[in-house]
Amino acid sequence: MKSFNYPIGIVLLVLTLGLQSCWEKDSKGNLLTKYITTSSGSLNFAPMMRSDSLSVKNFKPDTILHDGKPYTGGLAQYDLHEKIILEGYVKNGLMDSTWKFYYASGGVRMEGKYKDGIDIGLWRSYYGYNKPKITKLYDDYGYMLMRFEYYDNGHVKNYQNVKAPMFDNKERQYDMDQHGETISVYVEDSVLVVKQGEKADRVGKNVFQQGGTGHLNIAK
Image 1 (cartoon, rainbow, N blue to C red):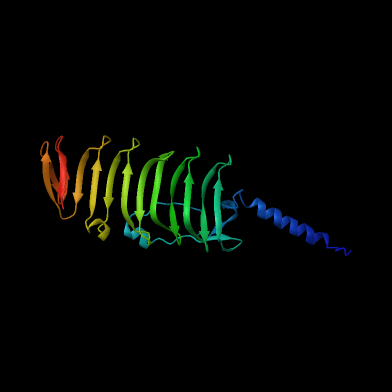
Image 2 (cartoon, helix red, strand yellow):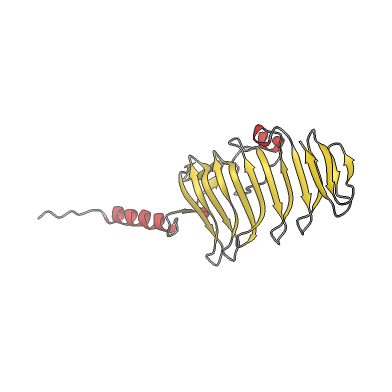
């Protein structure tokens, strides 16, 4: 039977590299953020921040590097108490697919998808434990199409959408109080129709404000 005698230095190197690989990842196989660098030199995760066209146009996503090369694989970050802060996937150095960001309590703070480092599709943020705070819909290029904001009691605080075919090519904005009653409405190229209650006041072009207990109705 043959025996192989390897130099002790090579054996130790192989063992060290194997252990290092284990140290760098969590139990799910996600690389820990403390073992990555970025093209900008700073590590800053800021989802749902870009709402206007200019901010999207000027945005350049960071390239995430591991051992000096664009990283592909799962990524995770934990706090000092080993509570998860974020987890997601990176493809060719850019954030991709589904990402989740967490409160220290364990509840989801934000969740959504990336493509080539840019927010796309439906993104949601929460007050805590599935209580919605803000919902945004982005197109495949990172431009925001629609936005909902909620009170902590679950009622919608405001709604807005851009001018796009999926919204009948009309820009809209609605503002509501904590009880769900409409405060003001903006609908592009629309007229006001009051059907119940006290008269509503027109406060600007295509903008209407509730004047009493009546309901605002906008004719498209």
